[in-house]
Length: 77
Image (cartoon, rainbow, N blue to C red):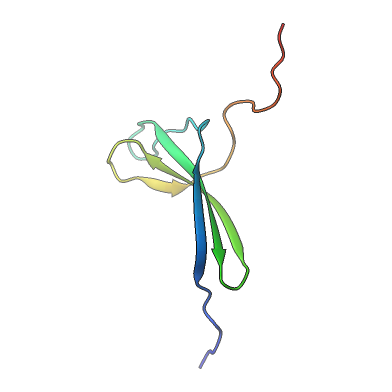
């Protein structure tokens, strides 16, 4: 019998990614995304980027966290 303690979720936090311009992989409609940070009672932490369809088609999936806009300093020309 395995007596390993199962980790339990202690805290989660989601922050919307405002410069995410991906599309739904199911229907092609624009999608939105959020960075979700999960902290567990054993000290482990996971960060995932989850995208969802802006229509109710039901699609949601983990995606890459590549920003679509430059968040650095802006140059005037």
